[in-house]
Length: 432
Ligand code: EPZ
Image (tube, rainbow, N blue to C red; front, side):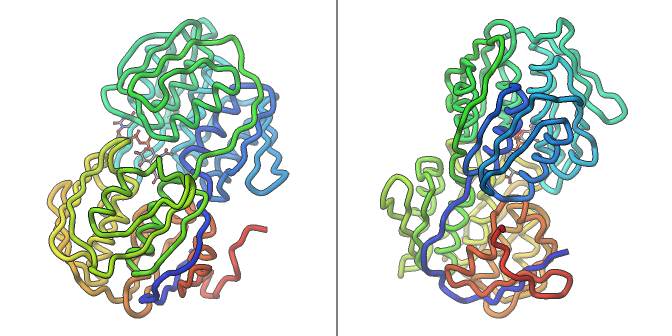
């Protein structure tokens, strides 16, 4: 398993380009199952989760061409199997996003029920109940979700999600796009990735209104056609690099981002004392205030409030802020796995239920640590960049799922970081 060796204490300086959003590219790739025509997606990030989903589409019979590394031309004309097998789903739970499109276009789908993961049990009951509201018959057979549309086509309906669910909203939006009649979804997720998916679906001929608000209205159509679309920038990668500048007391220009998508993060970090300037609609300038950082409480909530995917990175930053901050996680039940590793580096963090009390400012020192999930890995990299001495992070395959060529990007802005593969320093990871 790959490791990262990081020598910390170096202020990061320079320019960094943000990649396409993993959490938008995943539903957009799944949406290509809704049409036999070719869908061209640009700015698809070169990360493990997208490679996995591409393989799933090809296993189903889709053709995927990549004329350039981050452009995918997908043609789901000859889909022979309507299944997402356990071997794939267990490695990438977002494979459940195949359910909605398969059910909508073919009237059937069989997807392995994803297990939990490090951050929580992560059930998909809300997805399945919503499909039933659209007329699907859903059963669980030997660990697989088996869904069928009895009349061969789903029927539009009105319903509310009990809880806000991002992929649940995406899955049902895709299913409703080809349903007979109108669907109204209340308490829908409002993330920018929902809006991006709706924009792609409407380009394909869908009739979706209200994306980005709590109420989605979808007029089902007979079929969808091909389209061309560029994936939005990754707002969580953007937030991660903002914290990287702040935690190393450096100065970064973050390019190809969309500040509109992370307003809550920018506002919170400005409160903490990070100097963030919007140079234009796609560029941020970030530097740390000479007066240091102030400890500020944060609570994670659905968009447009502070995102759970930035909680771990924020906690790492709070170890360097003067005072006590309360970090409250309301979305997932076990998303503090990074705390124990930060404590091993010298942080002072007390966990009580879904609240972590961080006492700063504590000097961090390098150590051998273990990554546990995608965003916890990012938090540990940030802490290592700030710590004195060497840090060796194991199981960095977690970070490779969602951060494109992160070693190259960090090295290009001055970080002393190298990837150790089977005990040997690996070469540049820039994709060929
Ligand atoms: C999406 O996961 C993201 N993944 C996650 O990003 C993100 O943390 C999460 O939304 C919240 O913003 C992708 O978009 C691929 P949810 P998702 O359904 O859709 C409960 C990352 O780091 N719930 O919004 O799986 C669930 O357990 C990843 O990039 C049910 O109870 O999250 C959780 O407590 C991690 N039943 C809450 O709702 C359901 O049927 C929100 O989950 C569905 C969800």
